[in-house]
Image (cartoon, rainbow, N blue to C red; front, top):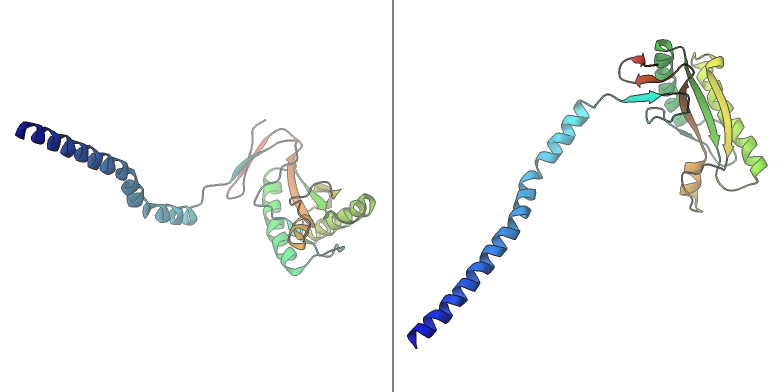
Length: 196
C-alpha cells in the first residue's frame, strides 16, 4: 500500500515538476524581450544623431524622394501658403546642390487636386498649382529650363476618403526628379555621382 501511495505521489510531483518547467521555459522569451527593450530607445537616439545618408538611383523615370517636400493648397486655390514657401525654399536649396553636381538632373512639379469638381476644372487647377511652385523655384534661383510642370488633376489621390482631412492631402504639389543621361546616384547629404 505504501508503495502505491509513494508511486502516486511521485507521479503527481513529477507532473507538477513538468508543469513548473514548462511555465519557466515559456516565460523565458518574455524576460528576454523585456531585457532588450531599453536598448531600443538608445538605438533610435543614435540613428537620430547620425542618420544614414539618403541615396537614391535616379534614372529617366520621374522619382519622388522624401527629401523633396510636397506642398498643400487651399480648396480651389493655387496660391502658395507661408508654410509651403518655407518647404519650397528648402527644396530649392537641395535642387540647386543636386543640379550643380549633375547638369543632367531635371525636376518636375506635379499639380494635384482633390476629388471634387470636374476633370477639366481639376486639370486646369492642378496646372496652376504646378506653375505656382515652378515660379517660386525660379525666384529662388533655379533655371526655368530645368523644371517641368504637369497636372494630374484628381487622378492621383493619396487618400480616398470623403472628408476635409483627406481632401487637403490631395490638394498638393509634388516635386519629382529624373536624369536625362543615364542613372545617377543622388545623396542629399553629400554628393551626386553618375553610374551610366
